[in-house]
Length: 373
Image (tube, rainbow, N blue to C red; front, side, top):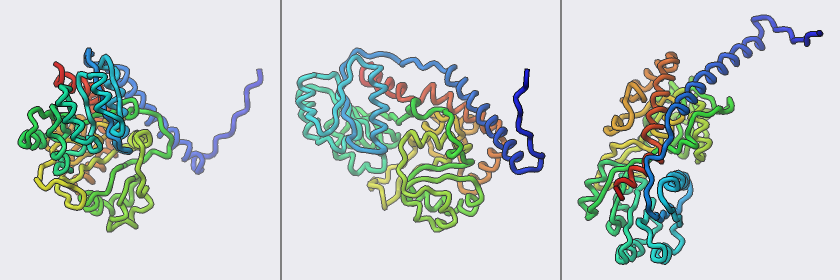
């Protein structure tokens, strides 16, 4: 039998040989971590947290990105948990539909585009209503004006529970968002998405000030930054080649960048930003943003700023890493970039915790228990 001819391997010092070795090493590293993530996925039960014999009418936010993916995540979860799910958008005739179908509950996301008089009519007709607010505490001056007619209020900010209670809402519950693990999950992605460090989000002023401190360090790293307003950085020119400016990324592409990064930075927006917030009450922000759950469910290490209620969801030092300031963040990036096994082990812990506790299936199950027992 004639053996097939093979190409001669170039001498060890050639560029081809170095590239080949690097490619093999990178492939092995990503493959090894992806395989361990798959083991976590397969080893974590994905059973619904219950089933409720109720008819539910869900009213979407009526907004585009980033709200439309939230709507889809909630609809997908509720569809598996209740007997019947009716979905409307704010432009449709909510009152007529509800009076005809008599749902056990009407759930509204955000509520900005749902006139309060419609909710009043439903309440007068004996139809129970609930709202899940999406932007607390940043727009609490506005949201407080339309929540009173609802029977139940859900907020993703712990500090807003007492605020709405003090403003006439009898039933208020703390319910943060979660991760849609059909999108935000470990996956094999092209090499174009692979970076050492990434950050995806808008350049609010607190982030601008912080990243200006990081700029001299990040300028020499494999970094990807994406979002609006980043040209407000004092050091924008220094980082311009690493920034995809004014891009509003869809969830699928966001998940690809999370998967491709060794470390994803999470930094919450400030609750006292006078330029963008409507929070004249000065309500603190202590709860995690949705990004915290989405990063973790991609099996990537997250370095996040500190919020008081984070430890309820993830254990710092075991599942995520927290930082106090720019100097602390740089030191921790350096450490975890050079300690591969620790970084991956922590990311796997966060993935496992997310699958067990922080999917939309679990969140909607918790909501339904609060509503119906």
